[in-house]
Length: 80
Image (cartoon, rainbow, N blue to C red; front, side, top):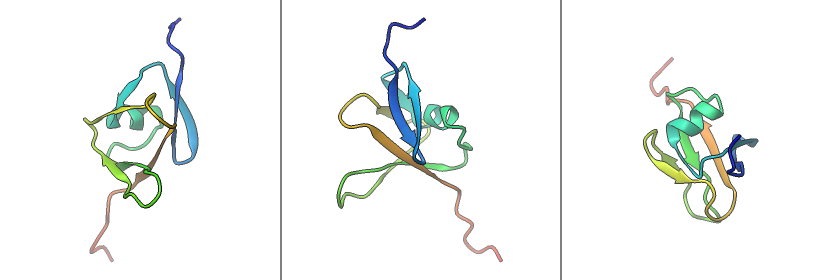
């Protein structure tokens, strides 16, 4: 059993947790069962634009307020 507390984060309004302080975008997708081809975004406060999180980018889920992410399917521009 890990002695680390579970760190909570949210993807598409559903709560998840991890004993790790930092997770990559790909790890967050895996924990939340988000398809790898989806784009992950970190919700920012106020009028700040939400931040796209790449699969290899690390996010400290312990630092600051709880982290809220949302997943967006790949764009299908030009499809009929």
